[in-house]
Length: 127
Length: 139
Picture 1: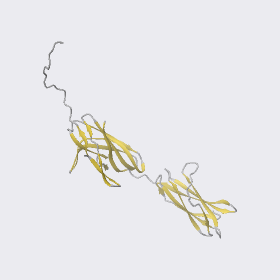
Picture 2: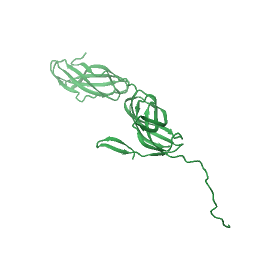
Picture 3: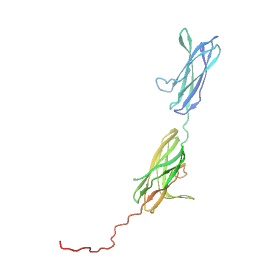
Picture 4: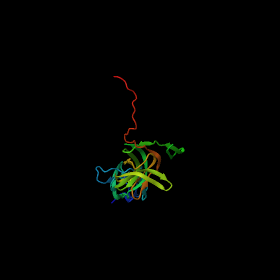
């Protein structure tokens, strides 16, 4: 249960292709009565150690009391399904304090049936 | 001159194609580039020599081999080749060339390359026509 920086939602696709960019949004609500600094963080769990991080170009924001802020982030989809771990922190007394965590799964998109797009002869030579 | 017309930033350009000369007993290696995505599978790569006309491609010599295409989660360009053995079934002359994937119902067919294969006339068996004495001298 979050004290101040409450993660409301992780917006992410249900599945993604390997090596594709996956854009996500983490919505965090300031439960405090006035503005505080809120920071977002994230990592991917899919069987590797350490867990790779999620890129949040703007990971901190002063959020007014009672307002929900959306943090945009992205990662590159590995060759298997992942569980997104999103974290929130609040700023007080010169330090950041961990506050909340939420997870969401992104499955690896199924490989489509085999198909061929084009063919061309690039060389022909006597052997 | 034989060649193909290809689109470019300058419009359509003409790329001249060299003619390869072959004779009976040779093999013609036809190398192809193809694009693929999806699950892995094994498919026949097929190439033929013949004459392209208004009613299709009249194949004279052809060959195929099974290629193993790996799983590609996105479009990938790959290359493979097939060898066509030149036999006496084809006579001397210039011929066209094309390739495809999947021999029965083609899944993808290459553009035809026109007059790029020149089959040379077979060299006849050794024979002698006549003999005459050209000189005679003491040695």
